[in-house]
Image (cartoon, rainbow, N blue to C red):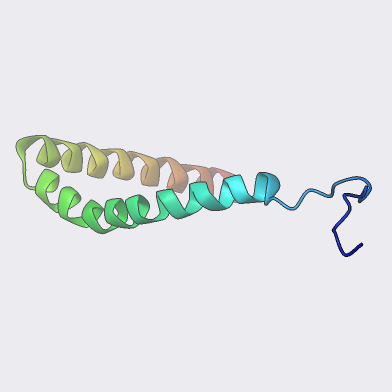
Length: 81
């Protein structure tokens, strides 16, 4: 009678990784893509900054910053009086 008899083990406990495993595999998949995108961003910015559109954007950003600075100074002066 050395044969193995099947028996009931009770309720099976989940041994999978569950939702954490899903996020982990997604993270491992997206991490290399994210690294390559982050490394390429400075090159892309430099290339666009030298283009005519980049020059227009830079000029408008400087103008916007000057306007914002003037608004802030006006607020500071008006609150002191």
